Structures are given as C-alpha cells and as structure tokens.
Image (cartoon, rainbow, N blue to C red; front, side, top):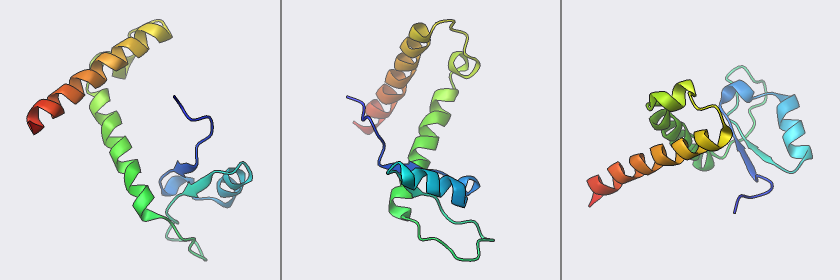
Length: 100
C-alpha cells in the first residue's frame, strides 16, 4: 500500500535552496539535501538517509537499460506499467539467481 505522504525528500545539491527547504518543511517533509559548497551557513544533512538516494538512482539506471522503457514506446499508462513490472522482475530474477 503506497504511503500517502512522504517523510523524507532525498535530493542532490542542485535542490539546495532556502525556498525548497521551507516549502518542504511547511508541509511536514524533512529535506535530506547536502548543502552546496558556497552556502555561508552549512545546514546539517542526514547522510545515512542520503545513501538511499544512490540505491534509487542505480535502480532507475538499470530500468533505463531496457530500450522500450527509455524511449516509452507504449501508448497507454497501463501497458507502460506492465512492461515496467516485467523489467523489474527480470532485474530481480537476475540478481536473485546470482546470489544463490
């Protein structure tokens, strides 16, 4: 069951801005964004939670290796979601077989 409201917003340094941080905090979402190097007062970042961003990026990279997903040949949302599920299952099976 998908969650209705995220607790954390994982982003890279490109999203480090006071406006973005304020708007997230106003709706109750904690920003996990490392501060830019030119920020005068560095804001603390939860780097333990930030590591999950890398895992998510690697997952998207694996899914984009399927040309049909990267170019979005499917016309309907339903067929695109079905192919996404097939690609995810194929990736999972490959990793599962290699671990056993």
